[in-house]
Amino acid sequence: MKFGVINILKAGAAQLIVLHHLAFYGPMADHLRHILPELVDWLAGSARIAVQVFLVVGGFLAAKSLAPNAQPGSADPLGAIWRRYIKLAPPFLAATLVAALATALASRWMTHDSLSDPATLGQLAAHALLLHSVLGYPSLSAGAWYVAIDFQLYALAVAMLWLAGRRAWMVPGLVALGCALSLLHFNLDPDWDNWAPYFFGSYGLGMAAWWAGDPRRKAGSMLLLMAVCMLALVALAIDFRSRLALALVVACVLVLFGRMRTGGEGRAWASVNWLAQISYAVFLIHFPVCLLVNAAFTRFVPADPALQGLGVLTAWAASLAAGALFYRLVEVPLGRLFQAPAAAPAGAVARGA
Image 1 (cartoon, rainbow, N blue to C red):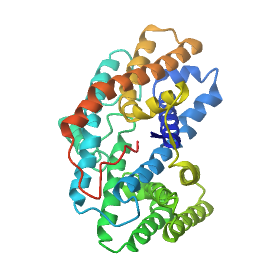
Image 2: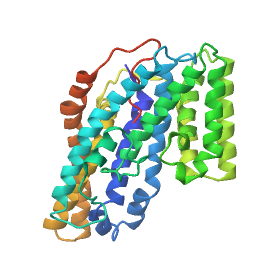
Image 3: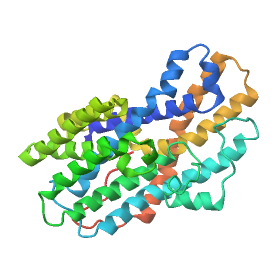
C-alpha cells in the first residue's frame, strides 16, 4: 500500500524541479525562449517554488516517523539524526562527485554561467558534511542546498521533540513557536536562507498536517494546525510570498488526503509510484545529466530553437533514466550498506525530498 497523494505530490514536484533547472541553467533554454518565452520564463522563475512541496511533505513524514501521535521524542536523538544523515549524505556525495566530473567534461564543449569552477578538496569535504552553504562554498550541483536544509530541518524537529521530554503538551507549543519565528521573522530575511529556521514554517505546516490528519483528531492537534495556518495567513498579509501560499495549500491537501492509501493498481498509479520512488535519485543526478546534454547540443547541434527544444526534452528524459539507474545502482546499495536499526519510538523517516 502506498500514500497515493504524497506520491503524486513528490512525483510532480520532482519533474517541475528538473524542468526549472533546465530552464534556468544552460543555453538550450535560452534558444527555446525565442519560440516559447512565457513557458520558459515561468519554468525558470515561478516553477522553483515546487520545492515547497518537498518541505511540507518532509515535515509530514518526519512527524509520522518521529512522533506519529504527537508524543515527545526519541530516547536516542543523536542516533535519529545520524540515521537521517546516512540516508541522505552517501548518495548525495556520490552525485556530487558525478557533478564535478560532468562539469569538467561539459566545460570542454561550452562556456556558460551554469559551469562551476573545478572542485577543491575543501569544497567536497564541506558537501560531504552538508555544510557547503553554511561555510560559504559554492554548490557543485543545483539543488545541493536543499539536501543540507532537509537535514537541518529534520535535526531541528528531533531537537524539539527531545526538548519536550515527557511533556506532551510542549510538542505543539514548540512547533507553533518555531513556525511563528520562521514565518514572521526568519523567512522575511534572505540572509537566513542557508539555515533551517528560514524554512521551518513550511516544514512545521507539514508536521501539523500529519497530526491533524489523524482520524481520531485530538483537539490539541487541530488547534496546532489552526494556529499554524493562522500564522501563515498573517505572514501572507504582512508580505505575500507565493512559496508560502503554496506550502499552505499543500498542507491543507495533506490534512484531507495525506493518509489516503492506494494499492497502486493500474499503469497510471504504477508510473506515479515509480516516479515518487526515484524522486530523490532524480533530484540528485539530474543536474550533471542536464549539463552534459546542454554541452552536447551546444557543441554539435545547430542553434535552432526547435532543435534546442528537443535537447530540453532529451535532457528531461535522460534525467529520469539516470535517476532510475542511480536509485537502483547507488541509492539502494548505499542504503543497505549504511542501514542502521531504528531506536524506539523514532524510525528512519521516509524521504521528504
